[in-house]
Image (cartoon, rainbow, N blue to C red; front, side, top):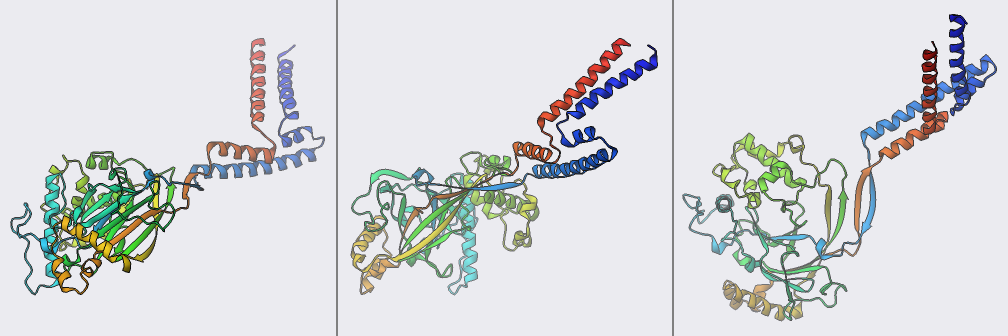
Amino acid sequence: MNMSESQSKKEKNLLNIIKDWLSNSPSHGIRRICLANSLFGRIFWSIIFLIFTSLMCFFSLTVIRKYIAQPMKINLSVRQYQDPKYFPAITFCNLNPIRKLKVPDKPPNHLRSPPRRPSPNHTDRELQHTFDELMNGYLTENFRKKHPTPMKSGYVLNDLLIQCTFNGYLCNRSLTPFFHPNYGNCYTFDNDLHVSDIPHNGTTQIWTIDDDDEGTDDGYKLFLELFLHQNEYDPSLDDRAAFRVFIHRKNEIPILSQNSLFLASKTYTKLIFSQRMIIFSQKCRNDLTVDMEDIFGSTSIRYSQALCYKLCEIRLITNQCNCTDRLFMVFSQFFNRNLTNKIKTNDSCSLKNKCFNNRHRLNSIQYCPHCLPECELIQYTIQSSYADYPNFRSIEKVSKRIKRFLRRINSTSYENRSTCSKNPNEAFLDDIVAVGITASPYATEILSESPMYTWVDLISSIGGQTGLWIGVSLISFVELVELLFLLFRHLIRSFIIV
């Protein structure tokens, strides 16, 4: 056998292997091309196969692009959260931050001279300037103490809180203080920390004809009775009289300018909150950023995007305006104690600073890309209703309780008003504020984010496209590997023989 005959036989064997595989190909188009008896049939099936293969590639690439883009879908579910451990934190402040009767003549320790006293015929602008200096003084003093205390010229908790019950048990009077230069002394209630084991007694208000689960030991309600002290208000600061209340998550620093509510006097306000939980799966965070961990030095502070933006804005103001925003010292109540020694407080931002006045133009989203939304975001929707408090028949009973409260705090500011009034109880009515905060009976909505395309969906979609257009499945690729193996084995044998 000469060389040419051997080469011809070798090529013939290769063609037979390929032809046998094509004749039994799992792809219907390829098998049709191989088994066609005419040139027209082969051309026809070749064109059809190319068209369908092109369509398969187009749709498969579309699926791959969507997978790479990572689109998300929203899943809706509901869950009951009628459990005290899910009750939010409640922060409240008197709308008037400073007591007129307790404005100090002695300045805070860091001030060389007391704030400039307004003239007898002072304007609101002069009083606001004095108030601003005084608040800055207390804020800086608290900052340097490292152990923030309530402002002496403001309202301490015992001055404001007449009574407090949660699920039928008395609250202890150690609510967490929070000082803010615009709102004065604020206090935060956390049912995990501030509920005693002492059940309510006869002097504590219980609603007996309201909703079935309110006021019972297994209920889900906070009741607060507060006192405004309007006789100590300064009309130049604010014309309104109310308590500001803010509902937020536990361990979350309250940013009071967001979603706060007013509680009016002589009124029982019923607040029913419903929760919506939004769960993100991508581009979110649960833990504090590295900068926030250095600032707070604790993992007990809950991360929030709003807090992250605030701290980032403060850093931008410090760098661009060369001064320290007062809000930085507000948040410093929760800072790492070692950090406060490194922060300058003598150059607090003034309203005369043009850069500071234009701080709203700072683009936080652009300069703070690390401030991602929380992976688990809870939004509170509040419904409110109102009733007169106390009613006409209960004035005498409530007044006795208020008088005991005033004697306990050694307040004599209402004695003259009581003697001058025809009804001695009228002096107290304008200062009573009552609020009941409870959860909605409806289930909590949970909106969870999940990828629209997972790797399983990607493989399934590509498999569906190949099977639909050219009849190829995953087993077809195994058969293709078998063809390559047969060709490789044939070439090896031919090489050995030669």
